[in-house]
Image (cartoon, rainbow, N blue to C red):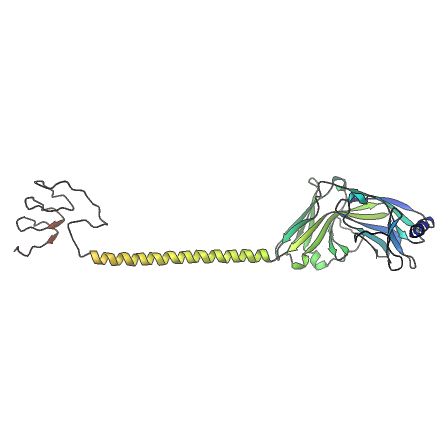
Length: 339
């Protein structure tokens, strides 16, 4: 009965217009019907004349289980349809219009393009600048590029490569001033730059194109981007810097403390040994190996073990013997039996 009723609406409708809509797999489309919304009539959007979504579903129950992917709204007196999460199976013929009034027929063609792999996530940090880049299909090269943000169930226009926009944006003008857009047609990439990022910038964004078809209008979105604004990265960097500086300071302090202790220990050792002069060399002085000293003249030696029968007047360190002549020695160990 419901299908028959809908079919009756088509039969009694006035003139019919038709246009093409190109969609991207995984993306969304916004379809702007040119039929003005009249009081007393209920707007609808139907798939192949059988599955319908109504503007006032409380008056006419929906017959299309679209799983939340389709919404019908009235914007500036015209019907507007948002069709999300498109798949290749969504390709087909659709109608939008009013019950008992004329309707429009559109051919939706959903395509899959390797340029647009699907949703992605971009991370931004408060106070910094983040850039969101999107590739687009070759067939959209000449069309104006648009950038929207999802606000609950609505898609809100943020910025576009075209100066003039048919539909007024409700996006905050204060936030909008921090957004800029550029396009590289050779690479088929658009880039949106957001400066001085704030936490309110977080959310889902859509890159798309505006596709005008005669008197009707539609917009297709090929890439969904989730912008995540977090302060965790800034905190981690700050903690790493603080930890690194603390570690460096601690190491420098330990090195200085160790050097001071070493100097004090060395000084104490030197004070103990300065008064001792013996027949063996000190550790800090060069050691010279001596051959047997019997009957040899060793006046040039630095360290010597004295023999009573040798002349060692030039030695620096000597142990005195009362029977030898050692008038030239610098340091002497006196024998109490000598004069």
